[in-house]
Image (cartoon, rainbow, N blue to C red):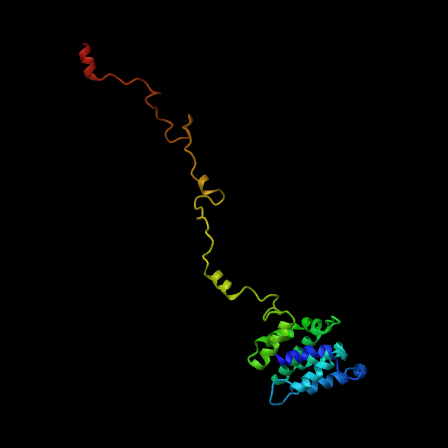
Length: 224
C-alpha cells in the first residue's frame, strides 16, 4: 500500500525532526510521541497518516528500549479499544521501518516477539479496527494467529473432526476361560487314561484287557 511504501522509505531517509538527545529525558520524549499518536479518543481507530509517517522517519534515531515499553503500555487491556488499535498501527509501522533498515537491527521485532502473548489475543478481537492491525503485526513477527499462547494452537479443526469420527482400534475379545493365559491355551488336550483310581472310568475293563467272551448257550448245544 502507499502507506507501507512510505514506511519503507522512512527507513532509508531518517528525519532530523528527532533531536539527537531524544532519549536523554528518561523516556519522556518517546512516551509523549506515543501519547500523541495513540490518544484514547478520536473519530478514527488509527493515527493520522502524516503524523505516523513523521514518526516512522524518526524511528531510526529513537531508542527501542524506551519506545517499545511505551507502545506496550498503550496495549494494556484496561485502555479503550481505539487506543489499542492505534498502538497496533504504530507497532506495525515500526516493524516495517526496522525491516527496511540497512543496519540489520532487530530490537523492535525481538521485543514484540517476546511479548507476542499480549498481541495474539487482539488478532481475534471483535472489532476489525483492532483485529486487522494486530494480525499485520503478528505477520511481521512471523507468528500465526493462535500460535503465540499455546505453542502452535493444537491440530487443525479438520484433523480434530477426523480423529473424533475415526473408529476405535480393534481389540481382541476378552479371554473368559483364563485371564492369565492366551485363549488358545485354555483348550487343553484330554488327559491319557491312567492306571490308578483317579479316573472316573478306572474300574472298568475294556475288551482288549478283560477275559474272552463266554460262549453262547446255542453254541454249547451244537457241540453236544
